[in-house]
Length: 473
Image (cartoon, rainbow, N blue to C red; front, side, top):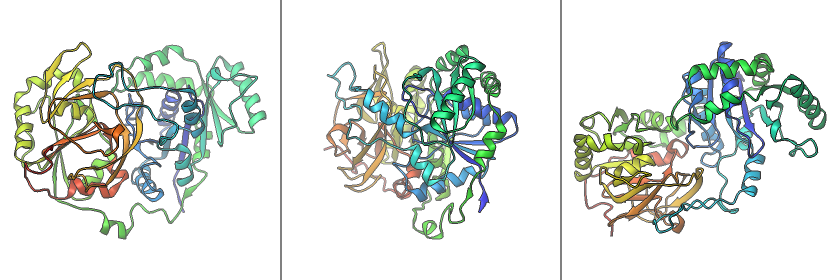
């Protein structure tokens, strides 16, 4: 059994924001020379990436709803073993369940005349990935972040299933020791640290633009505040409690033989407008024989030579709409790619870029690629990512009819069809979640294909260049 220091860190209260505490913990560890690798417990993109700013390691994604235990362990081992400490962060089930009971959000948007389905999960809808389940699969010591400003001395939350506690937003040292005494006596769980309210720093975090990274100075200040109440040694002692069982395999010989392989050239859009990808998906494409090359829809005039498939990830094309529209050479290159019968796969903001127009908040429409006959509009409501499962109702290069796909719906974009378009999802409430024309497919659902390895076959299998395939009826 090899040593593999690892932890689960998450909130137990529905209204608590554990992000400042996690960034503070990561910074303190890095300052002490502990190289960290973070994992998110759901395959969803975070608004701001503090972990990469602190450790230079891009967060990876695990998800018990998308993955089997074996796949999760393989994904964990691929990168956890390259760091001194692996941290899986998220929210424990008691926070998510409490939040679902308290909220009744209808995410369809203000204008119901827009053809769209963006409702929030109902009580019977899937809850998505579970930090608790990942904790069991990966044998993770568990740290619960408790926001003491949300506690009532008369009524505490249910006792968390945790090994240690971190107390967030304490007023001062005496407040920290008072809550430490109370919670240790009532719950019987040791407190290993905490952080004060640091109001100005939290306001700075809240003001960070989506898709950005916090300044290193902000993270350093968070780490200093964390050290006032906490010890890195106690965290590392807990993390090193268990080794990695010998039967955990990064990948078995059988899986190496059965998982799909293919010599495909994939062009990945990456710049300020498109930057949200699951790193494990890109890694798996290369491990399975694909050639992955990067291009910029903002600056490049053409696609990489001999591109078989274009991959447009999520991002913020609405913030760069004018620049994208002015790059006529790239727009023409993508149109020619589609018209030659080749494949494009786009998610979220990439889907919006494939449409005929993007409509910004002021109602202005900017022309885009036009591969999909629709207008992409920004949703005026903030709707969190929603776990959804869809069934393919039409043949596609992603898979045959009846194939089930799981992912998280990005409701930031609303679609208004303007012509014939193939609607791949069988479920009525996912009518506009997966659309296509010719061999271009756009999705409002973020799919982590590495979490469902057999689905990578759709990317890796050579596909005939034919406009007749997948035409809207």
